[in-house]
Length: 104
Image 1 (cartoon, rainbow, N blue to C red):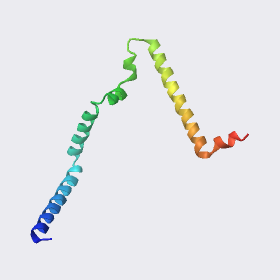
Image 2 (tube, rainbow, N blue to C red):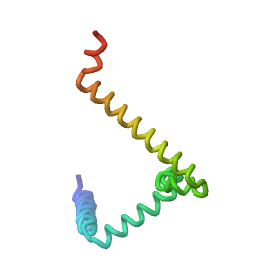
Image 3 (cartoon, rainbow, N blue to C red):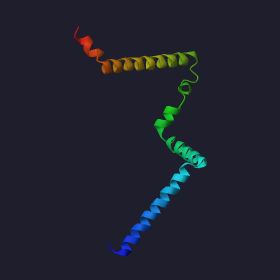
Image 4 (cartoon, rainbow, N blue to C red):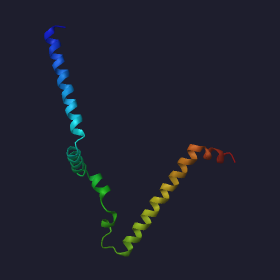
């Protein structure tokens, strides 16, 4: 490799090292991190799925009164029941309890 090409490679590597050092020093700056978090939240909040997830479930049932609250409580109870069932199945699968029960 000629001296000219070697100098060019050295300059590129040096610039990359300086750029990396600058990025690491800025990443620890509290103001930079706060700005990054704000920007990330602003961009993510544009997605419909995120908007739906962040929406308050009670806002959908506004004006329904007590019936809306009852439906909400039923929905929460159903979700909790499903989660408990999934946890039990995971436990049975991980411990082999399901396989032992089938032989009886």
